[in-house]
Image 1: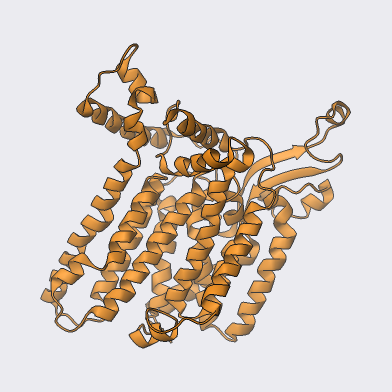
Image 2: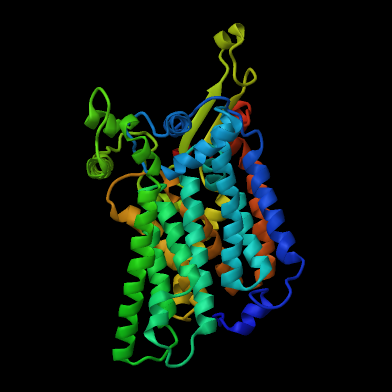
Length: 474
């Protein structure tokens, strides 16, 4: 049966009314503690820039020392400011340039739990979804190096959670014959969601995909279950769409521009500004600076459009669902010559690798969950399943439609919704408590087994090879 959303259900779930049970605070704190422990453990190792840290870590250092990156930017600035904050506090060290991303990844686990509470109205399934994210290999590895994808995931999941809060607020407050102004404006959570969307887009442009997610969910919230006639329904849809243009397009656009404040302040030191100004004192006015900034945005479009699929770990997005081609980001061994010179980074006769590959305990059972979600949404009118399918589809399928290879870690913002979808399929299946408990045990066991290739723990070669289950993982 689909779950009806009513004020009573909200009350019993520890929503806006009544006292919250102790578990409402203990469970999320424990989950965040698990996520943080995994992400912060030995965070300073490897003790050098590796993989794309060579770009984002250096850019973030420039933000601290110069206010703007010295080189030509390949992404918007906000995620690099998150990295820069860690450098500002802890110095230009491996821990310093990774801590901001690790905190973002840990908070994403909390937001997954909060989304689960809004969707499932129960603590146990929400906690299971959060645990699956806390122990997933892709979520863990992207949270332990200075890259943008875990930061993007935080803002995307925050935006969806705020949309769910808006949905519940609107369903509690609306009544028969409600005027269109309320549909146009929504609640304050809708505007906070727009703020989160702006932060996502200001981290990576793929955050634009989340705008579609928010728009579809808001439109469904305002139109579903009202019994409006065709004319009134069309008027309400127009009102929601007009309001969404403000909250989900204009507000994020303003946030995106504001995120470049450092670029405007340090215009003459930026890559584009220094070339526009030339040698000597820069006298560019606001209009010229804005025009140069706009040119940098079009340059970004051209850069990503022309980017060729030459990297050995770029892969077909179709294979991402079953973990066909993960990304090796770090590899270290100790040769005889290095041992003699005392230059080994790992013990002799061992190998250390970090591979961005999802947990088979999450990704492979999810392959069975996707048809269940589709069936529940289309046939049983399951609103929870339909809600989860929206971000799953709109954050994932555009990579297929792009028609060119990408990187598996592009799916980092999708991991929380894969976990939520799997838990929903377990919920509506036979013996959900037993299956859910088994899934939790399986996730813990998978983490214990795969931790060496997610955390870079040195192993002898034979033991390491046991962790690479598919030939395409190597």
